[in-house]
Length: 147
Image: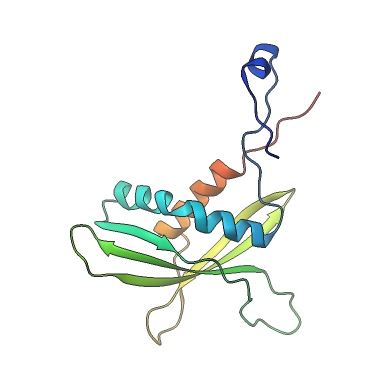
């Protein structure tokens, strides 16, 4: 059950959160896959990239292998289907999103992508990183203190 602030809450000065951070990585994956397309399209428009995101795959939670001594970070693998505006050619791009959790909030640590057999490269400051951080900002609002 989501808590919300209605007119009574405004009248009494209460500020209840409209959204909450997902509690775990599977919930984060489901919500991100369902809600990120408009954020991607907004980022494409703001950066004047003539692309349109159509769909995002459900996230895969199997982590990439890391060093044996290190605990694997929270990872999410998604594919984004896009096409240039006004054209029918579809492009599928894979992304690995690495997450950190601190004080009940999620933070995007890094975003990587790969083309063909080449090495992955960091696109954390690219459109996927921008859109994901904006989604987190809107989805994971700070919880006001309760009195």
